[in-house]
Image 1 (spheres, helix red, strand yellow):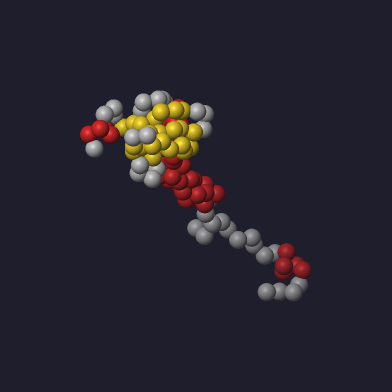
Image 2 (cartoon, rainbow, N blue to C red; image 1 turned 135 degrees about the horizontal axis):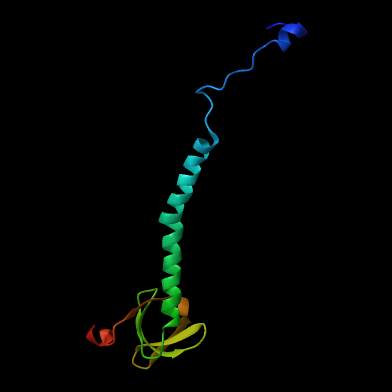
Length: 112
């Protein structure tokens, strides 16, 4: 190292060698992470949400359903946000449509 201006001006700039990575190579792991995140997390979740919305829209009177707590019932009334189900003779419960996890084939409750 020299303290003279003429020597400082004469220093050679470092040559780009194997120590410097290209910009695309630096972003490749980030891009791969985004693709993996999309296919393993975001896409399956959006499919489940879509299926749940279709299920809630298709519920009608007389359907046999499973509620999120595991209770089975037959739909007796459907409103915009709520459903009334008969779970036993003369026993009805009211709950949100979002609580329905599945619909059952007709006659399932009678066979149980």
